[in-house]
Structures are given as structure tokens and as C-alpha cells.
Length: 204
Image 1 (cartoon, rainbow, N blue to C red):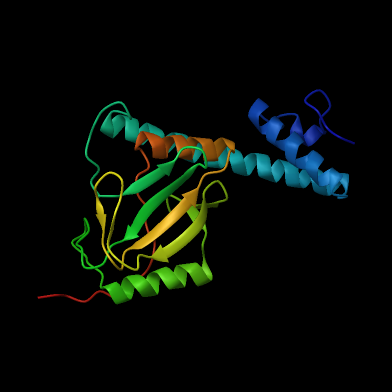
Image 2 (image 1 turned 45 degrees about the vertical axis):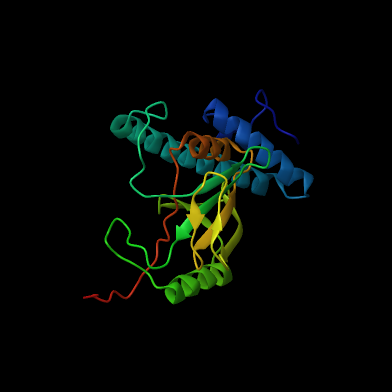
């Protein structure tokens, strides 16, 4: 049976209104694909709870930014110099992931060869987005991840160095995707973290 807000299985009746909307959309879609009611209910409940956890995580992070930086209306310089280009219609942003031979906030630097290795490893084995190192998400998708073959300039006048790891990210029109996209446009989300292990070498 297709479910609606007025006709829900018992296990879904205590969900929030937002969770019910997600449950109905997912569960009914699974039914249309020929799955059993029991499996559709389990899938709908799982997706509703998962999306709620993601939304809570985004809301908590936005509250943190509001508390410490005064929100998007206050102008401030980001701690990390990040270049991003926005495509308003296609909901895509271009980020600098790693720049070779440049010191980061931790006073670490990466050679062009190591940046190249990291990019290729990511492209071959991951290409997945993760929110704040805590939860994998489909609400941000990597469209392209590549090494700049030469120096070039962006429209805002910034120069991208040859050997820089760049990534195009797409933000779908989901509830969490919309919040992330808004955060990118507002400047709240202005960088990517590689979340990787590394062998550290002291440089004299």
C-alpha cells in the first residue's frame, strides 16, 4: 500500500513531521520497486532517522559558527586561504584541496609528488564526501577531482598553482544538500579536509 501522513504503519507514527515525509517518500518508492511492505518500512525508517541525524549535525555546526564567528552577515577572513568558484544554476563549487609547497595552519607542507599521490588515491579508492569527519553523505558529491596541469587565474584574480589538487563538488536538492549549498554560498563552508594519514618528515 502507498502510505500517507494519515495512514502510517505503527512503527512510523511517532516520527516527527519531517521524518514522516522522508519515510513516506522512501518507503513508497521501495514499494513501487517491488519490495515487500516489511522491507519498505525498515528502509523508510532507516532513511528518516539517518537524514535527521545529518540535519542535527549541520544545525549544530551552524550554531558553532554563529557563536564563534557571528554568522554569515559578519565579514571575516577565513583561517585557511581557500579558493572556490560557485555555479549558481548547477549547485557546484570548486575547492582547493591541497596546494603543493605551501604551508598550512599546522605549518605542514606537501610536495607536488605527494599531492599527486593523494589525489590519485582518493580518485581510485574513495570519491566520497564526509561531513565533519563523522558521517558519510550523499548530500555532497564529488564530480571531478584532479591536479592542475599548469598555473591559471580565477575570475576573482587568484592564481592556482601548477600541481594543486582541485575538486568540483555538487550539492543535490535534498534537505541537507540545500543547507550545505547555502553554507557554501554564505562562506560558512569554505574548505575541504583530506582526513588522511601521513608520514611526517622534519624539514630543516
